[in-house]
Structure formats: C-alpha cells, structure tokens
Amino acid sequence: MLRDKLLILENEDESRKKLAEIFRDKYEILEVTNEKDGLDLLKEHAQSIAVILVNLMIPAKNNFQVLKRLCEKKLVSHIPFIMLTNDQTEEYEKKGYEYGIVSYIKKPFHPDAVKLLVDNVVNEFQHKIQLEVMVKKQNEKLKKQNATLKLMIEKQKNVNEELIEALSNIVEFRNLESKQHIKRIREFTVCLGTSIMKLYPEYELTEEKLALIGRASALHDIGKIVIPDNIILKASKLTEDEYEIIKSHTTKGAEIIGKVINLDSEEFCSYAYDIARHHHEKYDGNGYPDGLKGEAISIAAQIVSLVDVYDALTSKRVYKAAYDTEKAFQMIIHGQSGVFSQKILRAFTEVRQDFEDIVKNYFDE
Image (cartoon, rainbow, N blue to C red; front, side, top):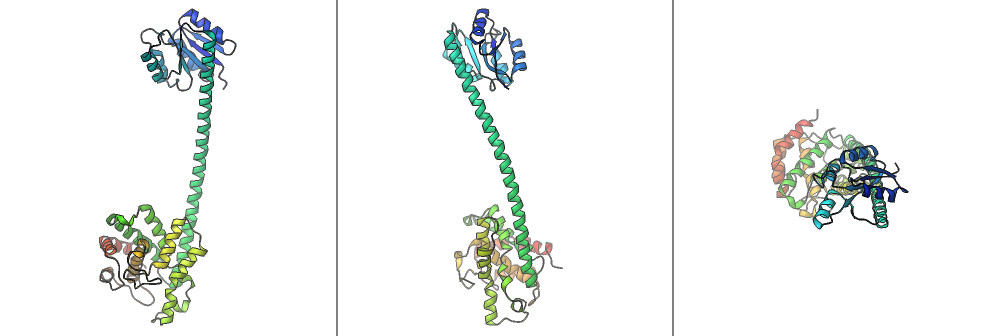
C-alpha cells in the first residue's frame, strides 16, 4: 500500500499549521491535538502513514507517555517517528532514541531544513522496510528450498536403505545365512560402538558416526556375491585354494563398493569400503587381506570384526551348529576366534547382556 499520509500530533496550533503547510503538497495531512485522537488515526491509517511528527507534551503528564503507548503497540518499528520539542538536552534525546524516535525537530524550526530532514528520514526508513521485506521473502524462499532439499535427502536415504537391504539380502540368500543376520549385525555394531564411545573418547565416535557405521556394516559381506556356489555353500572343509577364494570376498566387496555402488554420502561409502575390506583383520596382524595390526585397523572394522564373529558363533551355518551365547562370549574373550584389542573386549564385556538380548529378539526360527 502507498504511504502517502503524514500524521501530526501537536497541540500548538501555530506549529501544527506551519508543519501542515510545509508538507501539504506532498502528503495527505492528518492533524490531531491529543493522544486519543492520534492513536485512533494511527490505527485507522497505519498502512498508509509515511511519517509521524509528534510533540510528546501531549498529554503534559509525562513527556514520553505517548511514545511509550505507541511502543507497547509495536507501531514505532513500522513507521518513523520524529519528535517536536523545545527541549534538546542530551538526556532527553537519549531517552527518545531508546523509545524509537529517529530524529528531532527543535522549535522554532526552518521550513526548508524540516522538509529536508523529513524527506531523508522517510526515504531511509522505506529503504529499510524494503530490505526487510526482501530479506523476509528470501528467508521464506530458503526455508521452502531447505524443506524440499530435506525431503529429497530423506527420500534418497530411504532408497539407499532399501538398496542396502536388498544387496544384503542377496548375500544372505546365496550364503544360506539367516534372514535376521544383517539385522543382528547392525544392532550388535551400534551396541558395541556405543559402549566404545562411552569408554574410549579417543576414538572420537559419535551417535551420528555410529549410525553410519551400523548401516555400512550391512554390506560387510557384499563381496560374497562373486564367490562360486560350490565354495560358499560347501559343508565340508575347504581346500587351501578354496579358502583363498573365500578370503577374496573382502577385496571383492571393497571393489564393488568403491567402483560399482554409489550409495549415500562419501563418509558412508568410506565406512562401507573399509569395513568390507578389513572386517577379517586381527589385532595381532594374523588377519586378512592386508595383515593390518593393532590400531592400523580402523575402529569401525574392529567393531564389525568382533560382532561378525559373535554372530557366526551363535548362528547355525551349513558347516556348524550354533553355540549358545555363553560359549560364544567365552571363546571371544579367550582368543579362540582371533585376537581383539583389550579395549574392544572390555567394551564387549560391558554390553554382554545386550548382545544376548539382540540374539533373542532376532532369533532364527
């Protein structure tokens, strides 16, 4: 709406008439002599008033009573107020500025100077309002864009989750592993990772990182897709050559993730690649494929290494029956299933009952 009105709150007739005459050729003049009429006009024409000239001696009880009321109604921030005054002490001006006054006109005033001052104030204030409107529109636009982006990311995340689950299920199907295997691996991974996060802050794990590691763990055996059925499903003891082929699922899995699969964020892919390649490494260096030793093995790979062993021990496979959770725990703690770091073992001990609960919750019928 066009702001083409100027409101004068002034009880001195001569001053009010002089001001009206100065601005009559540019604005529609609204004149009042008291606070009540001024507030009524302001409410009625708030959207079309360009500037207000106010003598705060209306009423005389409190020089700033009018301005205080206007501030309470949040009108001062939408329309520039210029104070008409005979008093121009520093304290008086300071208080006026605190209430939102943008400038002063001291009586007696010169018409040309007053006109120039008011024009400058109006132009500056309108420019400020335009900027605020523009910023508000930009913010609203950004909010909509962010909401759309968030929705797209969420949809992509759901697609990625479904793809990860589908790929994991293919591995389970070919390997004749349980339907619950991947679910248990993810639950074990986050559970053990949370224990490590609390006990060992030096690993710099966070809930966000653990969520990614948990999801990436679902692809730890993706390389088994390329292992021949006659080897991966063999119930009897593998030959040395067959065992080497089985071991290659780590490098093949990393290769699939690194070159074929483009899933999720770069950080997720990095975890998935590392876990697929290194979840059979052992802390003493006797693992494969790279013979990594100690902390050269990432904490993510160390976690999945232990949970993969635990799940293998407590699950029925084509070549073995399932061990009970007590037996599986003791075998891992005493190094019968490979060497793990003392930190990992301590964290594992802390969540022993949680692991048993996960086995029960995701039991294979």
